[in-house]
Length: 383
Ligand SMILES: [Zn+2]
Image (tube, rainbow, N blue to C red):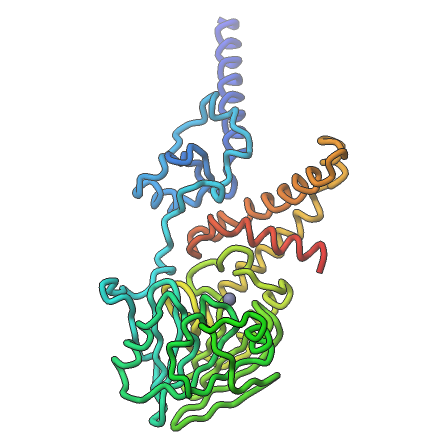
């Protein structure tokens, strides 16, 4: 009898220890209430917030993982990186913009009091009717001559003024379609770059400025200001005080993370600082030049929070990852190999911490956070 009791106790203890070791084992893989899912196409695992996991199941790109089998437990941390998966996560609803009639190719809508925005779903820009002629900002080639159609759709006024947000082709490369007698305004450095590029599709500006320029035409007023080389030397803030509309191109991407490497920003500290500078303006609508929709101050604050998160986690990774330790493991013969593993370890640690927090909030967080972590962590080491 005694033996039977002892045996039962031992069985219970051993069952309990199996249970607890299983619990510990599974908690190694997913923390903070996240669930482990299996990505069918990518053949990889990911830790996700439960609502995201549910989304992924419904779209068929992931399956629930009921229990951790012996094969699963052999997986190392390399299989847990959602950002390395080829297929992308479902987009959060907040990243979706208005429906575009793709047979027409563009959407034109009045924002307020004579300011209109035009979009093809990937690029966007704005123009103003003034009573004395149209002020057109930028000329993205993806929208091309549909921009002229969009203007014609809402006004008979001729295009008298053109503003360049910055020098890049993908935003002003169709500017030669505007009337040759239109006044073109840009920052001095944009003009300097365009002289070197010598591109007939980007006619040289007729008016340039260094710090500030106020353009008043008919009923409309625009304040153009330069706050440093955030994205490109010469990229300007274009502000309509009457309508409380602010345009700054290639910096804030409403509903989405920016394109790779901080959208190719030339100066990382300026790019970070730009978020505060934007929020100093009294605006209600933000025109960012890209993605599916217009923005609000809330979108700017959300992107700022995203980069605060990246800065924090890149900083932690920079402190924790030990260059000498990596060098001792792989040897110092090939110095670039040590640097590559060192940089990748830091970038990956930052990415792993940031992606799960943002995958539900910003479109493309699973795709470009790695690149942003790389840019920010490198900037923290050198700037
Ligand atoms: Zn650009």
